[in-house]
Length: 432
Image (tube, one colour):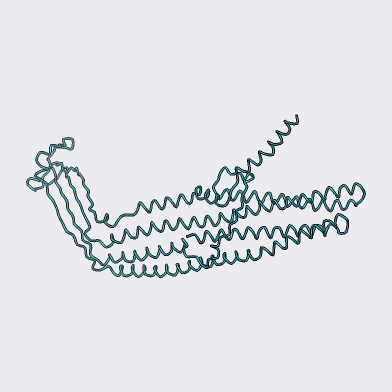
């Protein structure tokens, strides 16, 4: 019986640990899962593929267009006799076969179009980087909020263990007549408040972990079985003075380059367009009684009626009512506006980076002070707890000492995670 009891006990102790181990997540793992599962990234990837397939080389734009066709028509009633070229009352069948081709020898608009499409493709890539950056920044916030809630719950659960010991001690002393019943009521009030804090911490941890899992798009994730692992690595990259490469700035610079290409393309409205055209045609005609007597016995007509056309066309713009000048003026204004937008984005990115860098330095400088405050708070609680056990202080002093430990623990905990979160944010912002 003892062996069976031990086996059951081992299983009960082992199973929860095994379950938790299957749900352990680090920040790096969350980032990998999020990028793989996030539908926004998949949408952006489709847009990149679309922009890539939309690109055409400049040389391909000057390849000839080739088309062919067949027309089958009827003239019923009054028609032109192909033999005499006179109008007669009769029904005729006409069949026309043609092949035609056209090629641009010079078209300035086509010369710039491929470069514009290349900028569209680069803009799609830059936009994907921005989406990824924004997603990771939000993910970092959700991760550390959930991690802080998880660790804070542990702190409160440890405190309530001490409170349970005090409750049991005072209950025994009340039963022995060493303390009045009011002391038991007082310690029960303190104990109840701490149980409330534990329940609130459990709920807060569950809610924040669920938000994190939803952000990762993990549909089968169980927040209550997820354990977040902390692996702090404050990189020296946080000491950099500025951001040298940010996708938001890069995107706006690409947008300006595209506008400049479009501005150059508008020159085509002032330049001639030279085209070479060629066509080959042949036809068949025949007098018929009605459409039910249609004949496809072409005989020698297709050979006899063939003709070819070769032409060189030159189109020269002369007068556009000022539309061309107006369009180029509007485009130049857009370029100037985009230059200001680049400067605005650079300032915003720089300010964001400097703010995060400054916060990191502040968190680092505050950490030893908070650690010292927590150490003294714990010592104060130890002496106050001893005095409380011997009746030298009342429950109010004991409650105040416990609250001070909780407050100091919370401040040190949140400061540490804020420091780590800020360092991770800077890594994302400073990614090269």
